[in-house]
Amino acid sequence: MRAMGLGAWILMGAVLACGGGGGGSAPPPPPPIGVSIQPAGASLWTSGTQAFRATVTGTTNAAVTWSVVEPTGGTISGAGLYTAPATAGTFHVQATSVADPTKSAQAPVTVSVQPPPGACNGAALGAGASLQGFLPFPADNAWNQDVSAAPVDPNSAAIIAFIGASSGLHADFGAGLWQGAPIGIPYTVVASSAQAKVPVAFTRYGAESDPGPMPIPAAAPIEGGPAATGDRHVLVMDRDTCLLYELYGAFPQADGSWTADAAAIWDLKSNALRPFGWTSADAAGLPLLPGLARYDEVAAGAIPHALRFTVPTSRKAYVLPATHWASSTTSASAPPMGTRVRLKAGVDISGYPPQARIVLAALKRYGMILADNGSAWYLSGAPDDRWDNTQLATLSGIKGSDLEVVQMGTVYTADPTGPAPAISALAATPASTTTSAGATLTWSTTNATRWFLTPGIGWVTGTSLTVHPAATTTYTLLAEGPTGSATRTVQVTVTGP
Image (cartoon, rainbow, N blue to C red; front, side, top):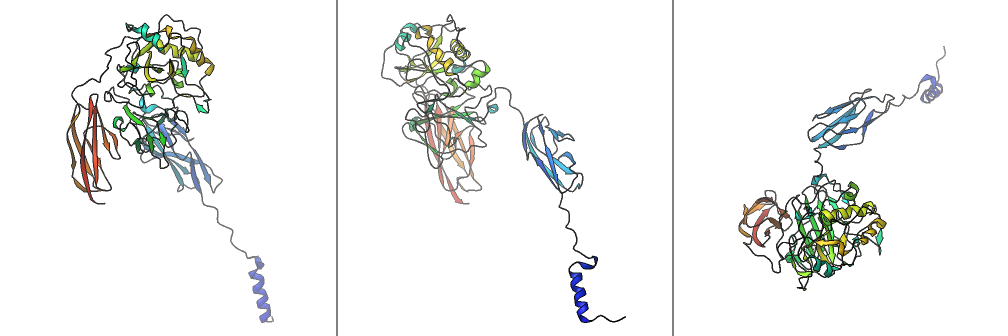
């Protein structure tokens, strides 16, 4: 056999390098197996259910096994239906690939205790959201009192005539737009866990306003719309703290803060009054939200509270629950702020369309409370595109002569007096600290029912709070009661981070 020459060896090498002679590159490795879960997480009430779906890639075997992993809580079926436990917590469901048990994915599930019907924290979120049956303020609050059997005020006929016996009711709320703006006074519901508090600077009535910061969204709806020149009310209910924040003459600022002519904060779980003689976001010193006709109530079949209304001229006086007047008129025929008027029991409302009939039924049972100067017999409500404006317009068939004034209590032509709030102590422990360590502010007061700390804190409860200022800060405690307010300051010196 003849030996191969150098050229032949070179040729043979080239052939082998090109895949000849039965050789070749190895096939690509199979793609790795992956698992994902949809949805990526869930929030449930206790004992609620959520269906999960798993996707497996890198294999034709799409099967998974489902489990609840540390911390365990609830159960999940072989088809991915998770059932939450009867206790709250954050749990994790897991899908594990059958083809490769080392591959899995998890999804967190936050389980919360469902609020009872009508609870503040059960309200929906957003502008014009349903309160889900929650009734602002306790059941015995003036807004929520059934006055259908209360005596008629001796001066009822004169007051009705002064306002306008022949003038009809008017729904100052509805669907759509009027002169380019929503019809009514809007409100929004927020959760303090998601909405940061922002500063509110006062432009007119700061001395009678509750200080911020307040959880007002930058896009909170404004009465009359962003370009309005009227009252520009902004109402925000924090469903987590059950506090109501109301602004008058409100304007959003570029940095997310707000300016307002006046602002008031209300604890919706309490009947505590703000100081006599102070205005609020309303002329009568009242809150607005509890007096609005809201569509979610009408949809549920009843408005379980009094409504807010206006008159052209009020009296320089008020009756509770009002705490402020806005008039120079002293005539006894003029209605004081806080006057409650109801629809006479004998007025037949059966022929009115459903939305109007529900409003009129509320006026028979709870009446309406005078809150501001404006047009005669104008009823306040929140805008909602589900209102039927044609139905609401039929309210004009009810005239002033169909109404009567519920017997008033004391008519205040001067603010009542009594023991004023006092702050006996306000201390910081330690007085000198670092930002990370912070300091605890403690206080003691008398004759106070509401408390605020500034700067940067706002509404507080209890008698102490831990703060972590970034720099040396002087804190001011404002203590309010129905007969006045008091302030006191304390300084926290910051020596380092």
